[in-house]
Length: 194
Ligand SMILES: Cc1cc2nc3c(=O)[nH]c(=O)nc-3n(C[C@H](O)[C@H](O)[C@H](O)COP(=O)(O)O)c2cc1C
Image 1 (spheres, rainbow, N blue to C red):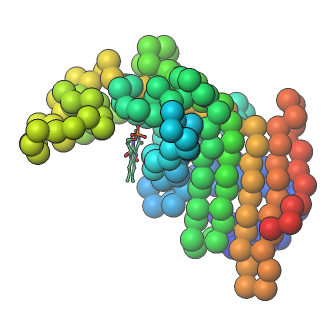
Image 2 (image 1 turned 180 degrees about the horizontal axis):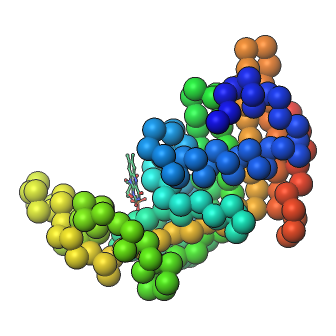
């Protein structure tokens, strides 16, 4: 997998495949910083952002998935405004990728069903809490923070189809930035001023 010097060798037309390779590797591994991106959405009071776990990447569909609780505020935000931006940063590679796209919400379809079946029991517990995520608590209790393993109805898969990628690579002497855009059939790419 790429190191920072190897990334500097990439030509413009090699960048789209390289980004998708890095995302796929992060989704399939546990140690990669790209596995915990920040996802920004538009809330009623302006931008909102949070860390998520990158669960799957489907490069042919330009798509990345994370799981969430259907009751969490981000879901209503994305239902109202489906434009989202993901931000990945890898300090070892000194690489930032910002990925813009449209989010689709999957609670009760084949994708959600398959993802739920893939979830470990420990992960399923994240969706079984009785309290709505973000609601005020009277007191802390173990039952609130760790729900029952039957939270299927609260389990939601958020899939984002990316159409713009902004890549920033930091170096000792200079920095390099590329803008990649999906034109409907291929990724086009151009260098940008960092
Ligand atoms: C390392 C890490 C991974 C996280 N992964 C997820 C995740 O995959 N899905 C999720 O909904 N929240 C995840 N969270 C919690 C969110 O960052 C956020 O606090 C929570 O989802 C509430 O967000 P909201 O109020 O914007 O809906 C994670 C937090 C951390 C620190």
